[in-house]
Image 1 (cartoon, rainbow over the protein chains, first blue to last red):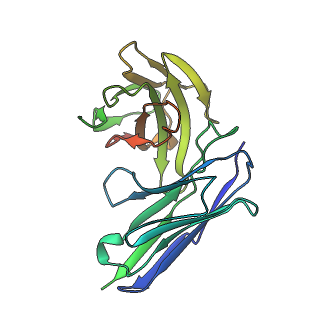
Image 2 (tube, rainbow over the protein chains, first blue to last red; image 1 turned 90 degrees about the vertical axis):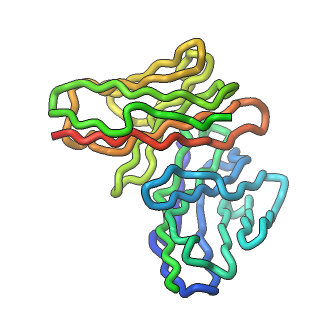
Length: 112
Length: 114
């Protein structure tokens, strides 16, 4: 099965700083790389995703980069705001990963 | 379209009892997955159903089971409840066509086992 590791497990930044969360996976057949955001007491929601034929994707203040050779992808948040405070999960998918393995999550706290 | 719904939202049971949770996917979504979320273990995959068939199963004991109906609604059942089954149970649906891997989550059912 897929081994998924997410780092760091907690991240505290000042408002306006950047935040980077890294997800490492083991299944080389994975071809879809999403990031989900879960605010306190709410359901996880997709915030950005990337496919294996693309190296980087941006959507306003968030971006995802993919390194298929090294089997990792990262979430980048620039100009962080207090509303970015949440738990972020990666979930590399495809290949044998029909077991839909999620990373253990990163708790991001943005301090005003 | 209406989002994924789950019932009940909260549940308190005692050890040894069984429980059934329900999930209604987004209209047109044929795949429903179930997850257990706990503070220590994050989101753990239980199983996925597609067209009334279990397509894959996570590493949970046989006390955890599920099914899917012809209208794509899904139920999961946990028998002989243990204290460690206390968790938030999330279901997620997706269309499951080509390039349709995004999971759309429900609000969850919070289960407390006493």
